[in-house]
Length: 232
Image 1 (cartoon, rainbow, N blue to C red):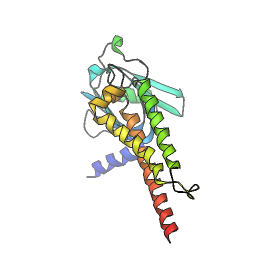
Image 2: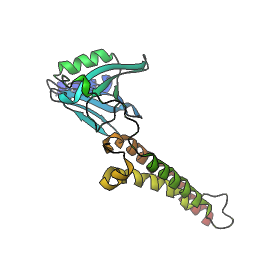
Image 3: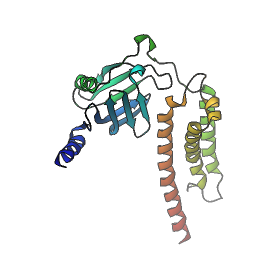
Image 4: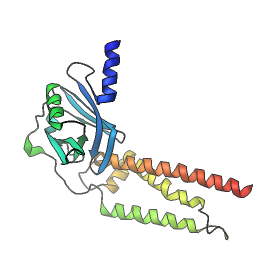
């Protein structure tokens, strides 16, 4: 029991835990495509047959044949240190980085000691291929988003200085758009370029859902409180 408690404390304080022989887990941050999750909202785990990067937005699994190399990544030393997963999975964003405390080289060595050894050839590395979404779909989203904000102007006379219920419409639209693209193959075909995967934008869509949901709740509470004050 004491050894298990010691392992849990080490995991929380140092960010590293070896739950079983041949497996490690590390707490840190992550960058998935253009979306960044800071510490402690990401976890990297490695075992002989799998490397997993899980964050609050999504999770990404790799087998040895999916990974070309694990590289040190640190555009700003001492502030941004991490390892980049150079991979061969076309359905994942090209840039997948795990931010960590301490030495990235040491973490790479620990992953190797856990038994995870990349085997994909360098020629299979997935590089930046442009944005996965069609420009037309982005333009339509922005057009509808701004159009819904204009609905807030359709309010009764004398309420010009008070936000109306229509202010919630753009937020609901953004949330449902993110949810629909992740769930519907039909929407994915309409929104994504050919031979692109929704997994490339899942993290970004989840971020849009989280932000729009939080703002929706905040504005709904403020509107409801305003209505109550007006009626008193």
